[in-house]
Length: 193
Image: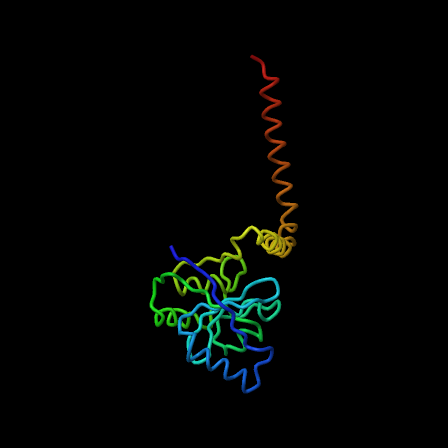
């Protein structure tokens, strides 16, 4: 079983356009960040995950990072991934794959566009790259139940017109079934012995 723990914060600045901010990103690339490192940064209401692939680049599932439009797995700069927010490193006590293989696995899914909050999000993606097990502690946590309910409600709302369109047919079948079962019960109740 993989043991995860978060260490330190790395501040990338609000809008890293200054020479100091760029040198911080360069320092990360040369020093503390190795290819295959699992990164996480806080977004509004959730933690966003990515895999550092070297040379200041991160592969992540863009997902809902583009507001309500889901995005594909893409390779972006560290500053675009972090959006000026602090970045944490998620360390694993052991990994099923070497750092080179983690990077290869991350890049093998570039362009994939099957983001689903509950089944295939950025955390699922990173855990799959590292351990071959697609899971998300954010989704599995008790606090995620509200999010799950909203996603399920949104899915039901999308299907509601289809469900209501079938309502007359379904209602007719239920009534016919009830009528035929009532006739059978009534006829057996009054039949002569």
